[in-house]
Length: 256
Image (tube, rainbow, N blue to C red; front, side):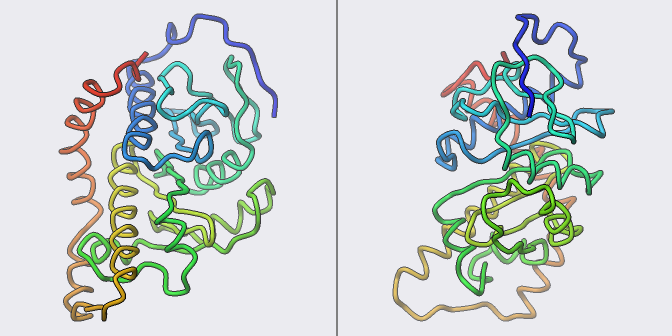
């Protein structure tokens, strides 16, 4: 992938819509770091800009998530070319995974992929996520699985990622990690937070060495059915301003 050099005028031509998305995406990176879900400079979060069906924003490969700002985000097209000046490259595996989802899903405003300890643990057990807790129960129908194919640098894997995800918004990359899709950055963050919380609770429950108590399957299925994407979106909208205030207190500067 080609790289370009930063020209020192980042942000001067951004529309208000682009500025808002860049701010939210940079904030999302910082929140992932704040909650301990980052993996050095690995994993990725991407966002599509309004009117940019063939391009998206992703992290500069080499910066910690806690460092990322709105102006440091890299704009890349679906061919893998960096199309705005940046001193950083893009992680090839991140490009493959995120371009696959943005290509296939018009509603994929944001895609989050993580390598948390608990997310990887659940991706590696045959049953995957169990309906043990309310965070898990409410998202069971949204979960897809994609088999491990090695480090995701093969463009041919994109078709299989697209097929495995389908219209669902959450996916376990087997033996690898977790993935969430949202119409906006805040929706994707709320979705991945639910999934990661459910994974951590399951790891804790399995580690206790005690018999597991599963809810009545019909009750669980009904709860899952009642928790709609619209409810997830409303929760995301409700929580996002508070999350930004938290960042403003603990790790400001993301909007720069």
